[in-house]
Length: 188
Image (cartoon, rainbow, N blue to C red; front, side):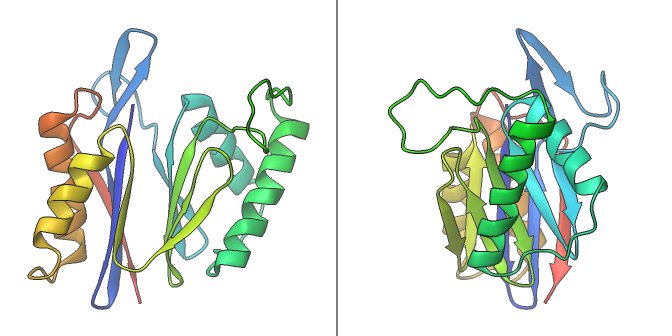
């Protein structure tokens, strides 16, 4: 599974993630028993984190690498980026367009967290898009990460330190989150 946290503080936005991926019952830890399999990818001048199937991460990585993007820095820009990505995903990749749920839109089975000069954006599995002012987290350990970050946010001043704290706490309590962690920052 995955835990990804992002924090905006001062003149920085930082995003951090754990290293655990599961494949069936098998645990795959980046840098230990599998080669680099990033959960956070560069997207223009920012970064995008993926929580969901490993296939979604590979699909997004291929999609980004085969295009030149300016990082979408507005809610509308992020929305259009994901409209195009989902349209392309269903057309060009191995993805089912069949939707048997009662959701009004197709479920991608993934969550995304984008950080860039525009802020922190979350895109939910059903296409719901949110813009966060201070911090956010996605994945199996998100509640632990959010609690840890919320407890130090007002008195802390280092965005990277707080995002990493969120992931370390998630790894302490969530069985689907495991260290080591990775982090990336954007200067505002």
